[in-house]
Length: 52
Image (cartoon, rainbow, N blue to C red; front, side):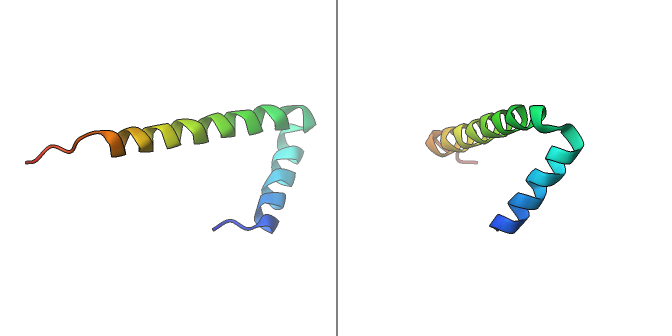
């Protein structure tokens, strides 16, 4: 599991590499990716499983 210290280090690296203006865009795209991943997981669980 990623802890708070790791998140801070990652945020600082992103801030240094891409600048402060790119940080909100990066966070937004990360949130959208997480939402799509959770949606796909939910659809997979709801889908009836085929018997082979």
